[in-house]
Amino acid sequence: MTTMFSSPNTFKRIQSSPKMEFGGLKHMTVPNDQWKQFFNSSSITQFLLLAFADRRELQLLYFWLFLGIYLAALLGNGLIITAIACDHHLHTPMYFFLLNLSLLDLGSISTTLPKSMANTLWDTRDISYLGCAAQIFFFVFLITTEFSLLTIMAYDRYVAICQPLHYGTLLGSRACVHMAAAAWGTGLLYSLLHTANTFSLPLCGGNVVDQFFCEIPQILKLSCSDSYLREVGLLVVSVCLAFGCFVFILFSYVQIFRAALKIPSEQGRHKAFSTCLPHLVVVSLFISTAIFAYLKPPSISSPSLDLVVSLLYSVMPPAVNPLIYSMRNQEIKDALRK
Image (cartoon, rainbow, N blue to C red; front, side):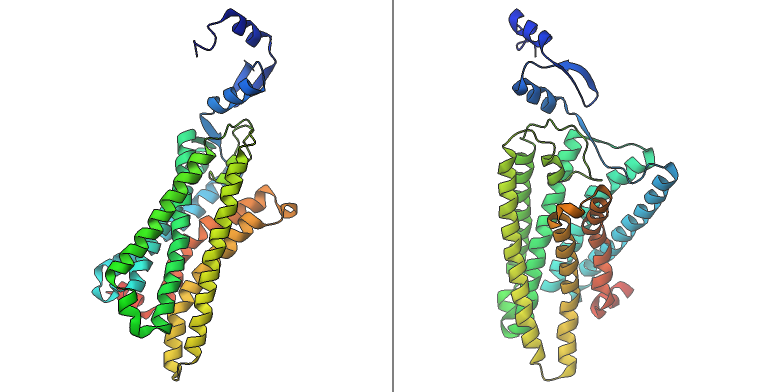
């Protein structure tokens, strides 16, 4: 900073420039819009997250509620991971992918909820700049990987029901590992790209995030540069890719239902539908809440509604998925009893 103000004339120009207040730094003087962007962006050391409630009693109530949801998610996903890992009867492609899904659910809910619960308990809203960047990176990474994995799981069910004779060939152990690695790698590259691009933007819209965790659309609202169009372009590409995965899942289930209805025995049809129904419910819950969160009309948008919707797509699926998969799956139930 000393090299910036080494010139006396520069120092005089800064002294005569308008004053501003930002993020708790009062009376910072800036010479022009370019300096203003620099000072604002470089002075952010923390962000302020959205609080669940203003009254202390409600804050504590929300804390215990979300603690219960978090512990239920940890218990449910932990039991599924343990059952699949310990029971050799579950060492099949379907349960291998389910184990990966449970790991992703554990990671995604642990990325957002603990920090929010800690802020609620200690009656604060702070999250550090690096903490916010890490939260965005891990959340985008885990959610992207989960959607990729759900697409792979739809392919697994398609091969199992529509091409059962080729199941061992198309979904051998090596192929399953490669597909899972591709899902995790896609999520990692996608998250690195978005996080680096988002936090390279200058921020001059303050440091208040209108959400209980850091997410890309909320950070983009704080940008003061036209370069945010780069991120918007990436988001458009992301929507197109997500739509492609959705079409693939939809096409797979159309073929699955057509093949299942041709099964002559009622027991065979029931078994086919029972193995697909949990995955279909999880996909529907995941996609519907995400679509409503990001594509809802601005006219119905409000901080309270955005908060509820974000809870639905970021907190509820990891907590509910283990219940969905274990309710109609007798093999999971037997493994859990053991």
